[in-house]
Image 1 (cartoon, rainbow, N blue to C red):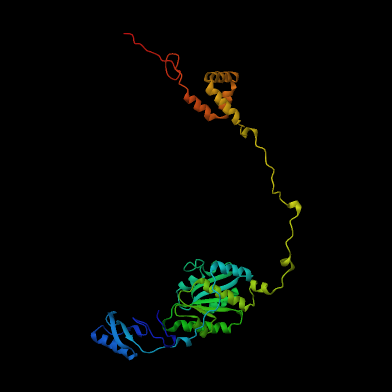
Image 2 (spheres, rainbow, N blue to C red; image 1 turned 90 degrees about the vertical axis):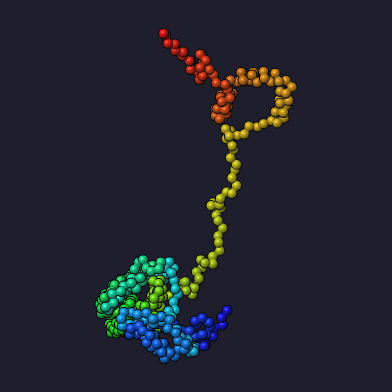
Length: 371
């Protein structure tokens, strides 16, 4: 494993601490051998050595795009760098909805817009719209958020007036167009208007976002938070909720319950169940119906009967015939109790023939034709 020295960190190319750097830039001149040499000397003037121009592509007749490689010897101590971060718990949609229902009693009013001449609403829509962004629901879906998306191309003064009208608790402004620092000028104007307007709530949360903005930049300009590319709606929602609770001195329910005195009911002993509600665990066996009772078989008498039948086969047949004659309903009763047995008995009997020799009991008719 590589042993990286964070106090003397250098760029990584092919090997550790080789200092390899890639640059790309454009010259306002046509592509030519002189343009390539000019790009190489320019990169060497930046302090890089072993410079190589690996790409030179013309961009029209008067512009050329270059990609250059070079090595540098400069290092940096990363251990001395501190960057401001948004220090709030990051919660997903379901978790945050439950958290808000426990701790917040009324809706938080959030106004979002893309002010100035910027007409790009992709950023503000991703955060505000109900469908959200990257499978993460937007603020409009949260039950305890009243999210109002004013879209784009409106002035900062109109945004402030709308915030006063709706009683906004948070303002979210997106800035996508950044040519010639147009976003810096527009956000500076918005900051000054908010400071001068005393109709706004003192606890108003001011948030900005965009492709060239981050939290450190937002704090430097006088806003409360800044979000850059790839921000999820739940990240913005988590910051708004926790910052709202902090500014309104709202404590979490779980934390408040931990410092509250315990009620006597929590230490009460369990009471025994009254006898009237006790369930009988021993059930009396129910007698089996006679129709389903199994007949008792005397094994000794059965063995004696079989031995007698083997010794006197003819008497056994006579006794069996007499038994059937004495009890003519025995066979019918057996067939009714066991329908399948009766069907099997019929199949074993030979088929009766009709009076005239036909099968199935139907008489056969012979037709003669007189000539």
